[in-house]
Image (cartoon, rainbow, N blue to C red; front, side, top):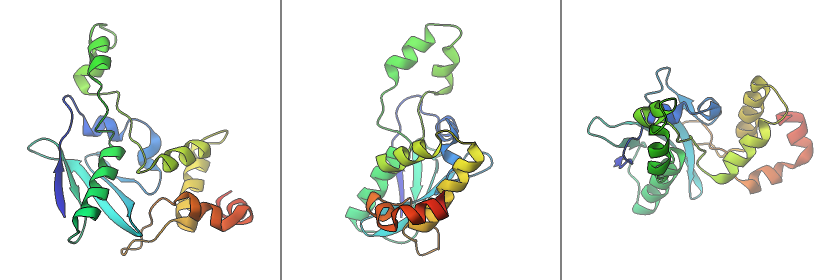
Length: 179
């Protein structure tokens, strides 16, 4: 499957991907030059790897192996739009930033948009895992959580777990394996 997602004016793929450390936390996989981002998302009961990259003709290319029905395609497109925060209108923010010479670069470079997880739960849990610990520990805990609770895709990678999956493993397993 290949789809080209429309992007808002001034959108910067690289600035969004590198907006903060989420791109380094599983299930994200970022290219060294930040020109592509992979992840695994849930579409119904299955986990599907997707790849995102800027389209030469404008927009963002979403790719997922195989052919998918319209329901699955819609779920993957919604997840990709959420991950890149494509529906956020930054025009007022960019206009205000452009009025101040110290911040004019923000609008010029398309900055200000934050990379997000495929779900609000993913963002919330990653936020909790960053609290009162080192980045190295955050990375390790996130990887362990995905490994312990995430649904496995056909290629072996895992999606970020859903709330019920985290609750199902219980506090003892979370303490011992995720920390």
